[in-house]
Length: 249
Image (tube, rainbow, N blue to C red; front, side):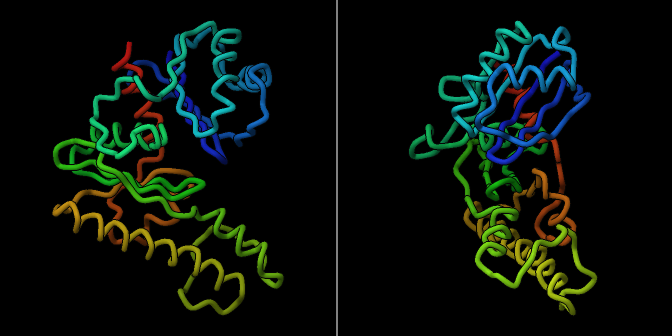
């Protein structure tokens, strides 16, 4: 079985594939100081190392790549494929400096093109909100990076002494009657407006009504209120890792 691992700045998502079928999957916090041995102990509580035939890794935390190499060699005794320069993705990268593009953005584009065709737009709600675009010719042509929902709210709470943390849920009305409801309204409808405006402008530059696919931990919060997001695919990044693994076997 393939273990697909997407290491983000805040959370790590793991999924176990039997051929093309995603079985068990997990979401854990990313801790940059974790060692390969610690990762092995953690994963022992989730799955059987003997079941893992290979590991495909996307990591936005460079220090953890070495630890996952240790994990693959000493815990799973399985080959590791790290998505990066030189790895076959099956999608041309039309970026001024392809080395600048995060591996998670590439595998998202790979999976979206495979599942939904081209052109398409991926909106990934993570530490940052990433917009990644596949052109009608099936090429990765760039994207947009915006502050993520959680870090934006954390910054607000840190700088405004009278504000407080709220649950990430949609309020009953846009006009808040309490400070908590007002914060929730700004969070949900503010980010919905950001997404809709950016997607609309991307479509204008593409000259096509490219479908927008949402993924990431908070996609389900924003997508129901958006007029541009057509589908939520929570495991899109894992699917991209599986596809890249198959293309490099």
